[in-house]
Image 1 (cartoon, rainbow, N blue to C red):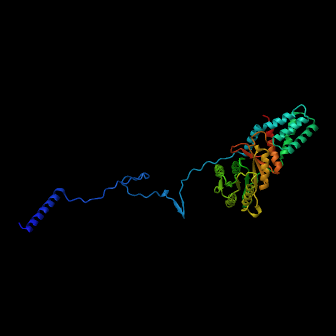
Image 2: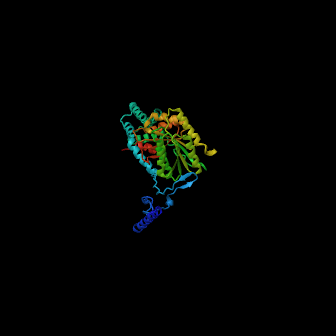
Image 3: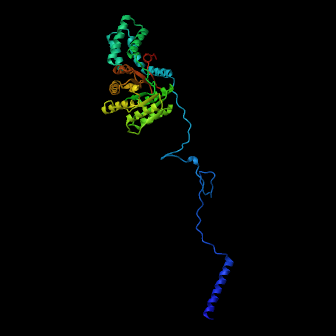
Length: 398
């Protein structure tokens, strides 16, 4: 067989085999990619199941964009129930009862001495010493004893009730009921009343600011707090917490910011919003640190700048004093008064031992009245000071 015929024969055989394979096995399958695993369902959408390709994200969760600031939509939460302070007379009555219970040793001591069969020189000296140990001060104690001694001699009485009445009258006189003890918190035209609260660390200053805010809110006044203690983040947090309890906002700055700038911003915002009272808390200052006291004076000056020309000073500068510090507290009071011109005093922790005489001593030293007293840590343990009520509590019989 010639070569050409052989090639033709082989080609025919190959064609036969190809046709036979197609007949037996069908056309060849095309190669495909390895299948990917099915897409996992979106568990956040109850309507999406296996095999669902795409769903649009719920529009409610998308942030709103304002300029370059992204503001996330936060679901509304129910408003918390605001606290309501007890009525002032109720608070004052409660404080008098506590004062009578804790400080009654002073009254009992004086009445016991005055009830002796013989009121000799030694007895009168003991009475004077008792008053001095109660932080009344040497001069006020001497004056009180001299007047009381003369009245008892002139009347020639030893009747316990009469002597007690004479002691009550003299104590009220030395406490001085003629002083104006009202808080100056009346709004003046377009300006809010501005109250600056100062004092050393540990006297209860920030707590006092919160309690004053409670009282003012109970009187239907709008209040704004200024956290000018920028040295302790905890102080600003504590003040803001007090504000939240009675629905009052707090202006605060970054930790370490200029305290004067915070005070200025608080007063400025109070003017813009028509607030009745702006209460400004300050850092606790060590009375022997002149630089810090100078800074406190700056806070006072700067806080008054936004006010109208006819109202260019603060309405109140309250000094918070711990009643248990005795003569050390007196030194603190004098330094603060020189730095910021104190207009009123808040005595805290007056529920300690028989130290009620500090009321007289601090008023004599500064020439300004005790306006508020605190007898505990409770939210309502702050009340207006009343001279007659205070003395009655000291002399109350148990």
